[in-house]
Length: 180
Image 1 (spheres, rainbow, N blue to C red):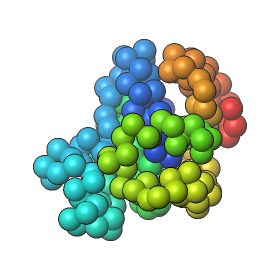
Image 2 (image 1 turned 90 degrees about the vertical axis):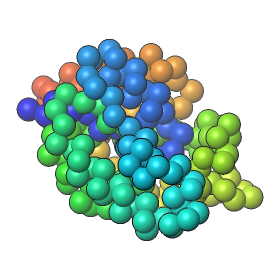
Image 3 (image 1 turned 45 degrees about the vertical axis):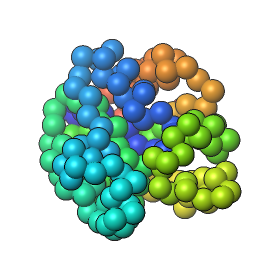
Image 4 (image 1 turned 180 degrees about the vertical axis):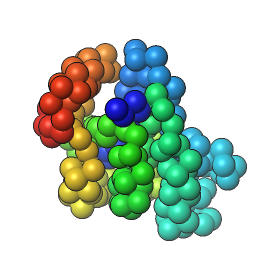
């Protein structure tokens, strides 16, 4: 029986906020991959992208997933691009129920506008177009990796957590079901 939960999805879908609340409700440890990467190398995500490049960052993601995918009883908030490397998904799938959190491009643009400097992939002139393009590219990766997905657009954290818990109960009884 899988005792951990991995939250995947595009940036700004609420993985960290929902993850903390979900871990609290379920009495599980909360782990965030981006925070672990920053702690490991002593640099912020934007600094890693600027100084070392995206490939180096993705290699750090692989290392962090290798370390945390073996955890029991945890809620893991994964970086938005974690699904781009199949080894990450395979490792997470061994002990985790994988939930894709999704949101509309306009909601993501609004949620990420506060943190413009902390989102290297959105450091462009037309952020909404970039979000749409990246989402379109990543959507099949998220869908393949996820046991099920939840749309977080315009929902309060508590509502999303309740939906996740409801879907986890359904999942425990019936197995993989994609939509919510």
